[in-house]
Amino acid sequence: MSDIEFSDVSKTYPDGTHAVSQLNLAIESGSFTVFVGPSGCGKTTSMRMINRMISPTSGTITVGGADIAGVDPVKLRRGIGYVIQGGGLLPHRTVVDNVATVPVLQGTSRKQARAAALEVLDRVGLDRQLAQRYPAQLSGGQQQRVGVARALAADPPVLLMDEPFSAVDPVVRAELQAEMRRLQGELKKTIVFVTHDIDEAITLGDKVAVFGRGGVLQQYDAPRTVLAQPATDFVAGFVGRDRGYRGLSFRSAERVPLRDIATATEAEAAKLAPGPGEWVLITDEAGAPVGWLDAGGAAGLKAGRALADSMAAGGSLFAVGGDLRQALDAAISSPSGVGVAVDDSGAVRGGISADDVLALLAEQRAAEDSARAGA
Image (cartoon, rainbow, N blue to C red; front, side, top):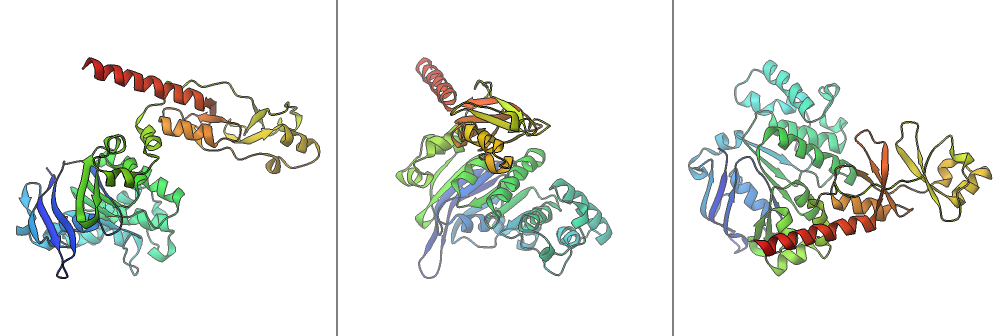
């Protein structure tokens, strides 16, 4: 068992600054908990107290039922993985030796540790060909994956992650978030993840702990509850006015109907003669969407313009089986007003109407109201 519990924990610095105030929090073993809040709210301090990088002024923290105040800090930290922004890699060591660091410190032979490190690189989606490179030779996203691999190398039951993805671009950040969800599904570590981004928090967390100024815990709930029922005005303000839109992430889009849409391959595009205001979705030979072509674009092709110059960007895509937020975003981001649904291979399955998404949302809410009335 690797549950973590804070009991009346406070941290006050010599200058009188209250970083954390009377924190009471129980983190279940095998769960993914996200600490979120604005800068200076005590979320990072709270996380760092778990591995005794910071000592509390008062209160008790237990890991697996044991008071960490009585555990040797070095021994404690070797049993807790730690990932920071930028990976925190040792610049003079190769990727494989960075990953093997903790197992070697624990007494594993370097040969065995390196062999195991290669397997961990596989697990986090890194090519083994990168094993002999140095951190400076990697992209930011690759460095961050190495940081995660190093934290997992000794198979610790607890993993602490301090804003690990905040320094990478949005596309890489989304990939790393998806990778963390996949890894957690396999490994079931007890993860405490710090971020200032509420979207990242609700994407990753089983539970979200929202901290306010002075290190006061404002709410600790499942992401859906934080969005739908903010416990305080502070939480409501921090989550933002578009929390209803974010809440769609927790609603299934399985029953959104897929409408027929006109499609054509790139080879067929020059033969199109759509009427005014009509849109055609251009696909590649495998059926994957490339972009939308309107009547003006088709006319441009006949005048000799390249297809790439005539198409409008396609908007976001909806992967069949996703949630209502993804479905609605696909519909409203599409230049044609119709979202594009794709299957696992990326091929077009049909179109999505924003009206259909909202109709399904109304239906789900009516069913929930009916269930509450009958409870």
